[in-house]
Length: 321
Image (tube, rainbow, N blue to C red):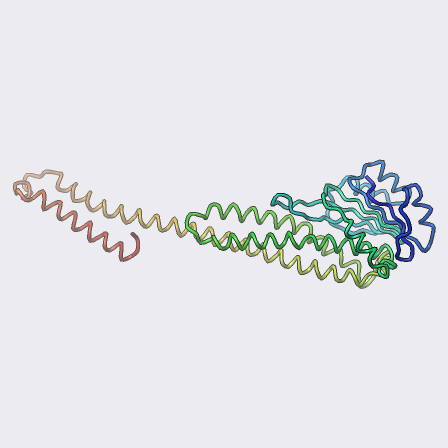
């Protein structure tokens, strides 16, 4: 579905045009065309391929989807795949944004995303002096918007991790903490898969050999790279903290189990002594003097109680009970 098809001239919006007129404006040296699409069909992408002379492999990647974040060169054009992230019902939803960039055009195709990029277009139109740089600045603005949308997701992950850390030493919460930590680790991994590859590819857009469509805007991509680097470090920090929290939680479980085992061992020792005395006196030997002593039974109970009480106090001092 076509969202926008706009021609810009000298950094100013010139006109909204139908797609069949795109090729006419591409021939003008002072204009560039910016088309935005959502969940494009094969027929729509085929039309865009003919109008912009797009590379068939790039069009196929945009149509099939499920691509890893990347930036590829096809002659004098670029094909970028970004993975925007958003929070949906407390979970991280990763969509896909394919961007075709030439010297005088930008075609963005978003898929499976509820968030559009109208704010990016509005921002660019408010800055005509920067929009004069052409399609390279539009690519920067789109990438910058995607990176900015990672930040709230990262903040939510950090807040969830802090909440779990506060309850990690609460008795009886170990099982729920493990489940929450593994769920948080899965979310962090999904965000890492979106940010990590993009960090590697953004470095191609500034310094050294810069692709032609972004020659005038290469310094802006350094800013995007810096933001991605800080974000990537933050995600790595979250993942390391989650791993440490899981180890601490498992250690707490082991300590609790050890405490239970010590209590069981202490009570077993106490009852073992009583059982030993009862077993000996219960054999009823003829020459055991207490058999014919009227105080023998209470005396036996007293001895067992005394020994058990002594063991109980000893285990209490050792904090086994």
